Length: 137
Image 1 (cartoon, rainbow, N blue to C red):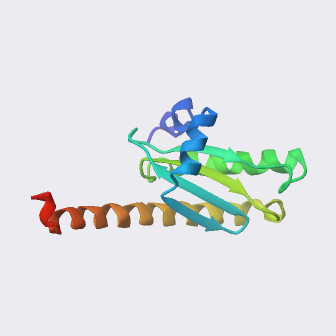
Image 2: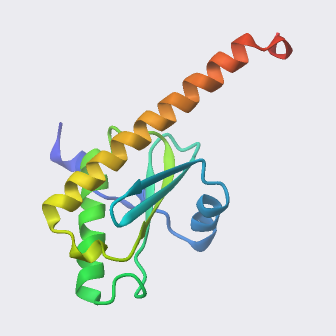
Image 3: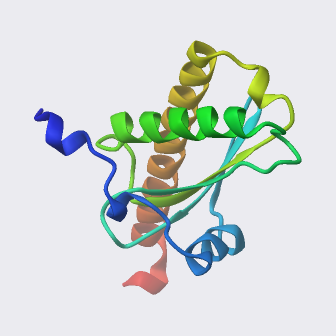
């Protein structure tokens, strides 16, 4: 795999309030991690997009918020080829800034694997439901 395809271009980001609002209003998947929550909703773009919400209320210091955002972006960048076509909003919870970088990386990796599995499970359930229902014929 070429290094250039592991970038974090604009197409991998949620860019405006409307895109965030859509994920909040239509979240089909909720993935809980220690100190983090990821909401995801399917998109038609063929690749994942991510948005970050790290509030001052939950992560007081700017240096901690920036570190966490940097680690989440890096995790998405490295896992983008495995993730399904969903829009993801990652939210912080209280105490997440106390996690060290290794723990956070493991946490995020586990969250992406659960998301991948949940999306796959839902899509296979939808396909099997479509083939078994008489209305689809």
